[in-house]
Every structure is written in structure tokens, then in C-alpha cells.
Length: 347
Ligand code: SAH
Figure: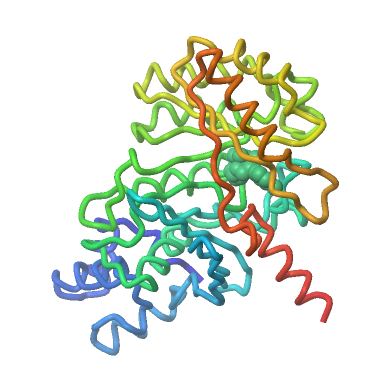
């Protein structure tokens, strides 16, 4: 099945024309889709609706379950049109609601601390499936394209966005398009484990979003222990690619650093991290590792995390310690899907 939400407004115009529809049909289809409607729910003549349904998935991404944490964070389990499961999270902050979007079913990057990669990569998501994650949540929260309930987007769900480069870029173009759900690049963050060639290529796409790199270590040797991708690209190459991104977009970049007990969270690590990043237009997001049952790694305690933060900031590095949200509902990447898939397969 094809995905109608893959198409831009212009592409829907040509499709409607090819189908012999009146010009206003294209706008009707596009507006309906942006409201999160399925094809069956679009106000179209029966013949046109059936023609669409014979080629395109009616509702590519369906909300299967919603879990609400004590802190209000919502975790969504989505079912794709082909039965695959992915997950998403909606976190509310003072400035709005941030949705965390998956870019692949599973992941093949193999990071030791991450539940998303446990079963490998099943398949890539298309641009329209990623967009539909947002359309479905916005609708379910009572939002519309004009009065959005999803105001910010982070590509930090399951998957490595730059391992699915073309679809992710297309998704970002449709997400930021005027007339659609229209979320500005400034309100979007893309997190990568550091695929250097794609980082450089992305700098040239003209999408000035918040580029975030999962660093999690202060030397290549350490990084190779938890992140297999470190065998391919060095931290020095990553930093060069970040500088290039800044040069092209004027946007400062962000490093994710998950604090893992006995691994990367000593004060010598904070000092090494500071000297690595000093003088760079960047910010460090610290988070205590969310323990993953299948992995033998633990997060640090709150006190160590606070000390790490203080050391970094006293050395002149802009940094924040993120609250771990939704941990009582399996908020970390891939946890919910992993649990769900194993629950299903154990039946
Ligand atoms: N593949 C991309 C985006 C997905 S993960 C990337 O690697 O950046 C989003 C962030 O969560 C990454 O920084 C990832 O390293 C981190 N992460 C994964 N599992 C985690 C866990 N159990 N606890 C804390 N952070 C985790």
C-alpha cells in the first residue's frame, strides 16, 4: 500500500487532477489529512474515495494504546497499516507540547544502552508515516492544524533518522510546509548517533533545525564500548561536521550525554567533556540513563548527575540536566514496543 500522507500539497493537486477531480478536491483531501482524518473519513464522492482506497492505506498510523504517566507524559503505541508497532511520546512543558517521533521500526545502530535496537531494524518509515504519527496525536489531543496541540517535535524515538535520510528530509519538508501542520524548523530537533556524511549533507538542505548528536563519551575508545557507530566515525569528525552545520545554518548544536554509572559519569569525564567542547557554539543535554531491563547498564544517582552538571557549567559549558519524564511508563526509547512485542510473542 502507498501512503497518501507522503505527498506534498502540490503532489496531491496533481493526483486529484489525474483522477479527474475538480480543483477544490485537492485542498479538501489535503486539509482532511492534516486534520488527521483517514481516507474513509474524507468528504469526497464515493468513486474518488474508493479509487484512493484501492491504492493508499486508509489510516497508515493508528493509535493502539495510550499510557499516561504521573507527570502527565503520554506514551503512544501506534499500529502501522502493515501491523508493525512503533511508539511515540508527548511531553508537556510550559511552552507547549513536544512529541517524540520514531523514524524506523527498530534500529540497527546497536547502542548498548538502547532498547530500540534490541530486535534490529525491521523497516524504515516513510515520510507520510512519520507525519501521521504527529497528525494522529494532534487529533487525539483535540488539536487542529491551526490550533496545534503538538507544538514541538523531536526525532528521538526509535530509529536513526540519518539511516533513513531521504524519507526523513521529505518528512521535515512536509512538516514545515506552510498550509500544512506547519511546525517551524526552530521547534524541531533531530538526534543522530553521529552519521558524519549525512550530517554534512543535511547542513546543505536549508532546514535550520536543532541538530542533536548522541555523544555519551569523551574519547573514541570509551565511545566504542557503548556505541558501535564509533568504529566508523571519530569524535573529531563529528565535531567537524557540527562546525560545518553551524557555518551553514547559524544554529548552535546540541550534545546528548546520558550518564551511565561506572562508564562515563566521573568528574574526570566532565572535565574531559568540557575541554572537548570549550569555545564551541553548543549545549549539552545531560540525562541519567534510563535503565533498560535487557541491558546491564545503570544510570547514575541524582547527586552525581547534579555534580556532573555543576562541573560542566563551572568550566564554561552551557548544559542542562533533563528531567527523566515518564519513566514509570517505559518512557525511554523502544521500551514500550520491546515490552509489547515480547508480551505478544510470549502468548
Ligand atoms: N538514533 C538517534 C535518535 C534516537 S535516541 C540517536 O542515536 O541520537 C534519542 C536519545 O536517547 C539518544 O541520545 C539516545 O542515545 C538516548 N537513549 C537511548 N536509550 C537511552 C536510555 N536507556 N537512557 C537514556 N537515554 C537513552
